[in-house]
Each structure stands twice: as structure tokens, then as C-alpha cells.
Length: 212
Length: 283
Image 1 (cartoon, rainbow over the protein chains, first blue to last red):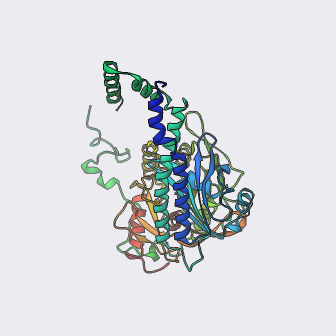
Image 2: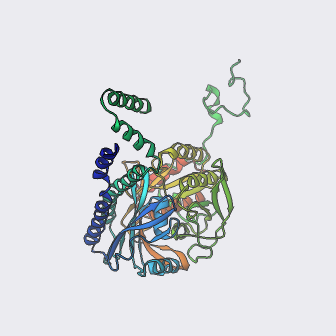
Image 3: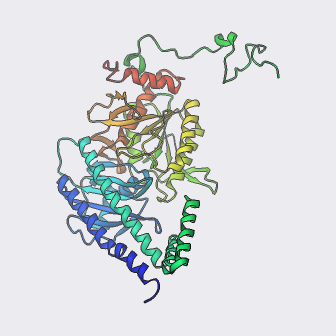
């Protein structure tokens, strides 16, 4: 048995299946958001720092599965503004905005009439944008709906934060990313036995105290 | 070292940190408020003339009929030391949001000068630095009012924003900043040197309320607002983003009628004419 297999198996058991689970969780959030608001669709964009793009991560609505994985520049359109400004926005009659309509239609084939967009904030980081498309028109929008949207965004943010952490852990296990050194250290300690293992753990404890 | 104040002549500039016994008569307060401040005194007949309002946002669409003349428009980037670099902005508005804010100001304060400082649109990465740089540049220009319908959640920018907000306050530039719609820590709206704005649900753009429980200090119209948007059109929008320029515009009205008010005095006037204090009488 390769000496790192125990560590890999232990971490992988907790991390590697998570991508699918998180995808299901994100999809569940947009499905519920769509149902609660009685909307035609809902979607979550994730911000990808490496490419400075927004990526469709979960979609509920018409033609939903074709959209997952599609990308757009982080600075474009209403989702881009919400991402950059970290501020929610609720708009009706967006079809009157010719550039928005053209951009969205080219990207998704579907131009909503109204949309609510809210940033996914986790601590001080913005991870993406949650959108709810074409809720039924009512006499007036209410601040209560804005509050509800924020609650959903908070839930989605936690899920996305876990997803991002899981992806970093996977990258570390694969030897990439800024956590790779930590993963390598953990693997080295895991491989030790007896007194050397105790000494290794004491060393890591001391390191943790110094860095804290 | 000799005593500095007792021997100064009346023409000497007073030190900012103390007031000698014989010097009190040398610091008259301009713009004394009347015994009763009401809307008629504060904004009756005011148009915002002579007041510069900076929209720190996504740019403003040129020649939008609901915005009219844009006095200046710059796009902000940062150099290697994160200092602001301002270039003429020929791209207009990359989202629609800045145009919306400008339209709200124009509707309420038709003769105010509108300036666009674009801090959004060059990509998300580094947007916090550009926001700080844009605000720094706006404060350096000395605009009477800076509308910030945006914020940052980055704590490392908090100190810089705090310092800029205080600099603006002492230089008599009014920062009007959107409160966040969500329960998160973000800046600069939480600082007491700015005027922070949330939304109410009523349709009258001149109705606004003082909040006795800050950090949100005022509530203005922010729900189902018909705002200017891209392509010369309008859109119906909700968010504190659109309440903020309403207060910025009302502040412009007050300043145009009573130029030289300090931010402290202006905030007091806004409080006194808010609808839940003494502001039922309309302009």
C-alpha cells in the first residue's frame, strides 16, 4: 500500500464526492428560489478568478441544463455590476435595455422581462451571483421580497464557499494550488510512525501556534 | 516655546486644536440655521444650481434624455502604487446603473452639475482598489456631493475608505452612500462621516425618513422606481442604489439654496425636514 494512500483515502472520502453533492445543493437552492418566488427561472453564477469570468453553476427553469458551464466576462451586464458592486439589484422591463437583451439572448437564448440579482457574499469575499428571473408581476415589489432574496443568497453563499474550499482541497491533493505544501506536510506526518510521528505532530502544533 | 495664541493678531489663523479665551469672537459660524427649519426654508424653489454631484458608479450614458448634460466623465484605473489614474471616459455606461442614479439626481435637482466617475467595468479583479482610487480622485476634485450607490466588503479597504470619508467631511464634500440591502459588513456607508441611505416603499421621491437607529440614517424611495437606463429608455428598479441618489439630490437642493453648509449642518437640516421629524410641508 503506498504510504500516502491512507491520507488520500481519508481526505478523498470527505472531499472528492463533494463536487456532485454541492452541485445538487446549488441546484436545490435555485429550484426552491424559483418555487418560492413563483419565478420562471433562477440561476447561480460562480466567479472564477483565474479567468475573471462568471460561470453558470446551477440553473432552474426552461432549457436549464444547456446553460450550466456557460461563461461571461465578470464586468458585463447586470450580473457583472452586482458582482463588482456587491449590491443586490431588482429590475423590471430589462428587455428595454437593448444591449442587455442582445448579450443575454446570445448567451442563453432566453431574455427575461424582469430579474432579481444578488451577490453571493461569504465573509468579505464575493463568490458569485444568484439571479431570479421573471417573478410574476404584482402591483408593487416589496422590501420583504428583497429580504427573502438575501436569505436565499446567504444560504447559497455557504454552499458555494464549501464548494470553493473543496475545490482547493482537491487541487492541493493533486499537487496544485497554494494549499499543496500544507497537504504535502500532512501527508508526510501521516506517513510517520512511533516517536517520529509524535515528534512530527509536535512540530506541526508548534508551527500552528507560531502562525496563529 | 512661547504661548502661541494670546499674542496673535486677529488676522492670524487660529490653531485647529484649541480656542483661546479672546478668540471666540473670531470664529463666526456662516449659515446659521433659523429657529425653525422647514422644507420651505431648506429647499423651497431650489433647483440644485451651482452644486456639483459626482456619480461614482458604472459610468453615465451620454445624451440620455432623462440625464441631460454630463459636465465631465472619467474612467478610473490604478497605477502600480494603486494611485488613481483618471482618463476621459468615452464608453459611457457599461451596465445602466450609473445612468439610473444620474437620472434620479436630475429629476429632483434639475440644475445640478452631474459628473461621472466610472469605477466599474474593467473586470472584477482589482475592483476594490479601483473603487478606493475613484473615491480618492472624487474627493480630490472637491465635488459638493459624491453619490456612492455601491460598497466594498473588503475589510482591508475599510481604513482607507474611513480616512477618505473623513477627509471629504472636513473638506465639505458630502458622501451619500447606499446601505447594504443584506446583513453584511461593507463600507463606506457604515461610517458616521457619510450620509447612509436605505429604502422605503412609498412612491413619492421627496418623502424621506430619518432613522433613529443608525447606521442607516435615512430612508428614501427605493422600491419600484422608474429610472433612466441604457438605450435612452427607462427601467423599473428596486434597491438602496436608487434611494441614495434621491437623498443626494435633496442634499443638492439644500446646498444650492444654502451654499457653504458643513456636512454636519446639512445632515441636521436633512434630519429636521425628514417626514417623520418636521418635513410634512412640501417644497
